Image (cartoon, rainbow, N blue to C red; front, side, top):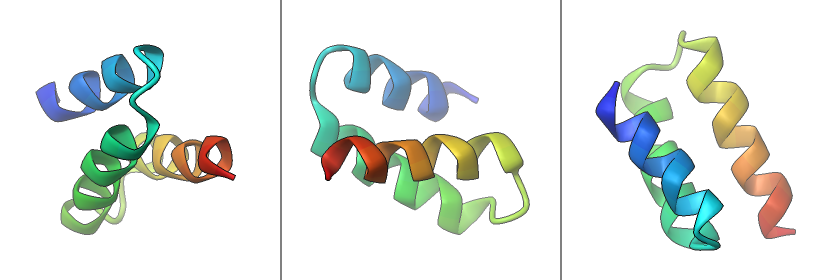
Length: 48
């Protein structure tokens, strides 16, 4: 999934909000995908 790779790359670049936005969109499109949900939860954790 290319979008997931982009979101992870954004997080590594320190673009946490942008990464979170991509992951939230992905999670809404793929609610049963555990990897996406894990990455999405992680993105909220690092924003805190």
